[in-house]
Length: 292
Length: 292
Image (cartoon, rainbow over all chains, first blue to last red; front, side):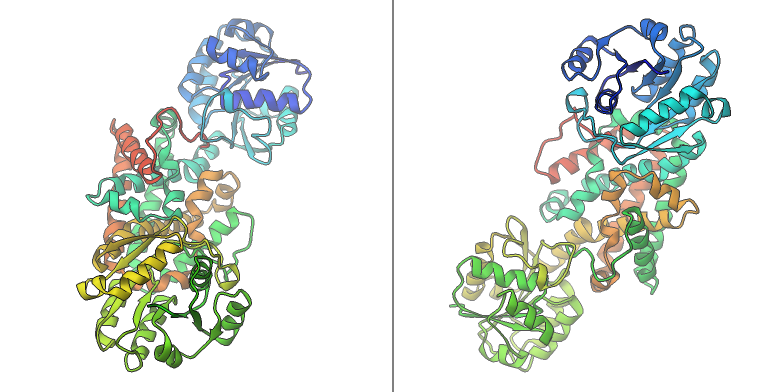
């Protein structure tokens, strides 16, 4: 029975998870492990009931939820090794899974660890912008290559809590996770960065910006991301990201070749079909972007 | 004095221009040259006062506004050659300018032609979704490599009307126009198409779509565009588009190389600065996308 959940890193995701648990009717205790300033903000938002040390969390919590940047999660796993009790479920919300799962195997005495990745977020960071409905309708990716973890009673109970936040749990292996999000999230981020960097490097960058429409806004919104957020992701998933970017690079080369051939229609059709599938709709051939 | 304006192609742009002129207090006559069904729709929306043939438009209009697809504009310019009166201003709303300007030089007896490109649009097409405020706050690119056109009294009068629709006129040469929009609009469209096509070609495309967040939605929205809209643009600006795409391709190769080096932060910073400039804001280092 999950009665106490400790959230390490009570920022946007950790804070929203606390708020979402409360909104979903979770009546247990919510502990926060963060800097004093963050704890203060989290208490003010009622995302947690009280701040504790990692040691106290390890002693008392049924679930420890690591909602920190990836490298901080790795450090926390190492620190938890000698502290954690066998019956505690350690889970996380990091954006890549293989490196974290490997560290958990290495440092947790039982190796009992549930990887998690809620596909939710917003532009701003911090518990100040946390929201109880951040996870509603969004995939919540779960990884546990060890069947012990996947089949455990506490895992089932935690996944029920996740569902009660409105998220849509989806099981993957850690390797599948990292491959899929490299394609769905990491490569698109870097394509946006590469597009904006290419335009920034032009001598006429200011004029290009002056004539831009909403299409370029869409394509460069991810490029506003700060490197601080992405560094850990890129370092812990560089192989899959490189492979996904190589496919995009080839696809752009193909589009360039198609500029001088008759295959462009097919590329537009394939691309539009995928974009429509992403939106859960059939492609409507009669519509199309007219801003250009 | 501009008293009669004929709009050839009363769709989203042509219809919106008619509505915007009326909303701005234009009291002259608005004629429409389109298929009977489109004329009917445009009359119902009050975007025009009556439908006419191109011949009648050429006989009576002070301004003929070509708001058709690019290849239709080229055909209309050829048709207008023997019909047009010397005092009429022919202008257009096509998305590329060099090919259209060249056809105007070739076919119009005086070569008197004002290129135009309102940087406005929406996802849907047709006069049904035309709006009087479509141009408000949006750049309206004007090209006239011939100083006669740029300095003519009727040109000044037309540009005043454009300003009264809320658009922001900006003068360029036709070559500058095509180079800038290749970078700001055409290459971003094809990057979106190439990204979506690359993902569509993966054997795990369905799983990628299932775990995608709003970032991939942004990056593939342009990929929903129909080829019908883009064919003419790609064919009449392929050289500039290819050059802009080559820069993006190089930039992606650079990002891939940076995955294994220490230069990624610089790329993120350059990209974020451009993306912020585009939005008319300074970059706020404390914020960043957290969906990933």
